[in-house]
Image (cartoon, rainbow, N blue to C red):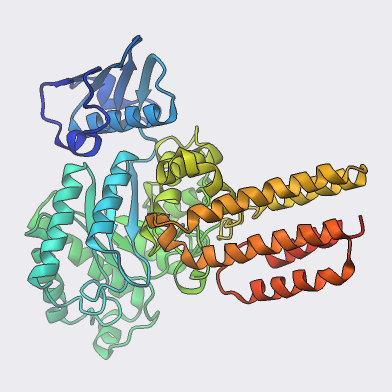
Length: 529
């Protein structure tokens, strides 16, 4: 039973099965006091703080929630839900508030956009992870980029309206983005009017946050009228952003704007980004990806430099776990790392760019959500294990973690295939100690785990369907390990040919998995023994 003096529709929609039992008693109390409206850690007024008290109980669940409104109540239930899932719902009082003010994800990749079902499912899952923003910006939605002047047809508009209303129920800001930079003439009033007309269409279905994306376009002005009026691109962008922001405010003073600049990575003190930041309204959010397009780390010192030179705290567009363009052969499943623990003090927030593989994106996004909520207490590996258990179930988590250990292949530069290297190192130690049976037992235990993981991956889980190209290579990897163990056990050098033939085939397959050089080096290190 849930006792509340206000309706909690999102709680019922997202957690109906979890909190519907007869032995569940949860009381929700709303207050408008410092206790739940102010977070001393971030020195921020907030509607996201809550106090969750889990009461001792011999049977069932007893809990009390003190919060300021429906959003913080939803987050308290999300917190309690995860504690129950992970067996961490010990009696006690938990005072919780997020570190980052803006926490979200963006469908901003090149390639086939997500389906409506995938979008709705992602929203639900990230609402459970207490994210509060979803940006709609699929590069290959023609009405977002190529056909930006044209209104959405009725069927597409209906789909967007469903997303907007769903996001509102889940206490998430739905940010619709437009990318006119490939063809806009900044000096042309008809183009500006088309932009405003398109914006009004989205406003009419409930959008109250907009994004203007000026990334991945020509650095030089392409129209003579623009060259005459503005001289250089940054001046045209300052004018467009300022006029668009003014038009949005005239439409509705509550509307907010995010801008992705043409130069969206670097030191943050370059000419273009500095001049743009100083030239646009102070309350416009400014995207930045860090030093690189796909940054290995995000540091507080860099965020401070960006803010100093642009007069805007960076809103990071984090290009992880996205795997489009040159990264399309990679599968990014590893946890978010190398984002500094105190970055929330100097950045407005982080928006993670997703993969076209929606089901797979959930795992790294979940770790990103954990970091955004509690950056100082974030433990990547523990967060990753929780995300995997939630995605595939506890019974399959161990196998999936073994498989995923060979997919640390992103810009984050994690060490890949740690379990393979550890297995072969342990085998080498056992052989050197004159214990061949123990050595091969170690190898065969590893192989058995691989085969169990392969069995799961060949099933019909949504994750498995998306992972098919990597599973195909993983199957061959299993055969390579099996052959390596057989060759080492026999000691017959003539049998090495099959191992190297399989390795050559493995290397020719496009999907990235365990590095073939690492496999070969680990095998060759054992052969003399």
